[in-house]
View 1 (cartoon, rainbow, N blue to C red):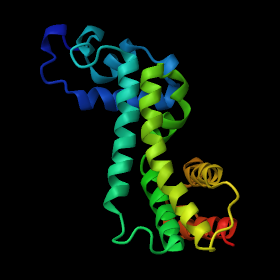
View 2 (view 1 turned 90 degrees about the horizontal axis):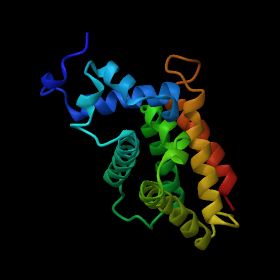
View 3 (view 1 turned 135 degrees about the vertical axis):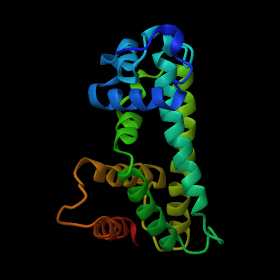
Length: 198
């Protein structure tokens, strides 16, 4: 039973965002109402507006949070000499991307499928954060081309292709299946290496 509108002091932003994440991933942003989110949390719809001005803001917060978590986790794995060995850096990036994203299927789904529902200002900010992540991979590929270890005609396009392939693991991998996550990482690293090697 929903709480009365005045009894929402114990409802937190994280609970609302978690409900929105589940519902957006399951039904799609456009199909989910603020009333549905409120029902999932257990409050009247009006109580949500104490925590967020609208559904668009919730979507933006979810996407921004995902991208900020991704960039922070990636920064924590930075090597001491980031330009020393493009092949080692590419392997590290490949394995990191798979591990990070496989643990966040709802966030990944929303980050890729709901960009079209962001208003222009929010879209621009999420694109800026995505570009910061993609730039690292593009830099690795450019460094590898410069050192003669990679043969990539267009490092930017190649970075898009590699990220799309790695993110695709989320569509089929299931824990407890035929392959362990470590085995999947190794198989994908082998494919990436062969795709870009000189």
